Length: 302
Image (spheres, one colour):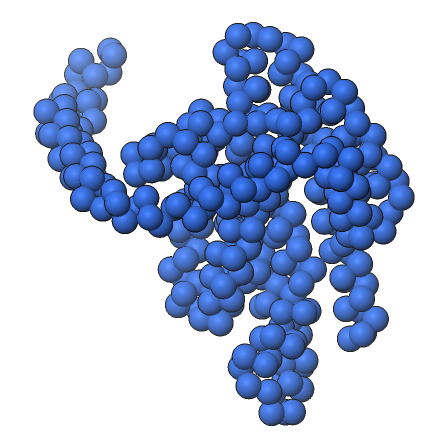
C-alpha cells in the first residue's frame, strides 16, 4: 500500500470492467441461453426420452431381479474378463458385504447408472477417437475441447446440464458422460495411432480398403489401449456419481451426499466402501482383460 501511494492508480488497481457492464453482459447471456432452451424444450425432451427409458429399465432389472441371479451374472462376467479366481472370490465377498449392510438396492442403482454411462461413452468416444486418429485437423480441434472437459471442475458441469434438462436422472447421466468420455476418446485415438506402420503397409499391399484396414487391423491391435480407456471411463463415472446425486441421481452417491450434509460418519463410510469395492472390481477385471488382449496380440503379431 505504501508503494501505491506514490504511483498512479492505474498501476495499482487492475483496469477491470465495471460491475454494471459485467452484470448486464451476464444477464444478457443467461437470458438468451434460457430463452433458447425454452424454444427447444420439446425437442430436448424427445431427444433424452430414450435415455430415460433405458436407464429406468436397467434400474428395474437390476433392483427387482433376485440377488442371487445378479450376483451369479456379475461373477461370471468378472471371471470371464479376468480369468483370475482371486478377483472372482474378492467380488463375491465384496458384494456379500455390501448386501449385509443393506446397500444392495442402492448399489444396483449405481451399477445401472455406471453401465449406461459407460455404454454411451463407448458409443460416442470410439467414433470421435477414430476421427481424431485419421485427421490431424480434427485432432487439433478436438484436443482443446477435451482439455477443457478434463480440467473443468466437476460441479461446473451441472450448471448448463440443469439449465437445459432440469433436475432428474438424465441430467445427472449426461453430466457423468461429459466428465467421463474424454479418456475414451483420447485412448482410442492413441491406440489407433500406435499401430505399427509396417502392419498397415502390409494391409495396404493386400488391397485392404480404409474400412477393412480399420476393422481388421487397427481396431484389433488398438483394443488393449481402448480397454484402458473403458477402464478410465468407468472409474471417472464412479467418481462423478456423488456429484451427480446433487441433481437427482439416486444410489450410493445420494447416500454419501446425505451423510456429508448430516455428518453421518458410518453411513458415509459404508457407502464409500461400496463405491470403492465396485471400482476395484471393475478396475481389476478390465485391467486383467486388457492384459490378456495384449498377450494375445503379441502371440499373433509378434
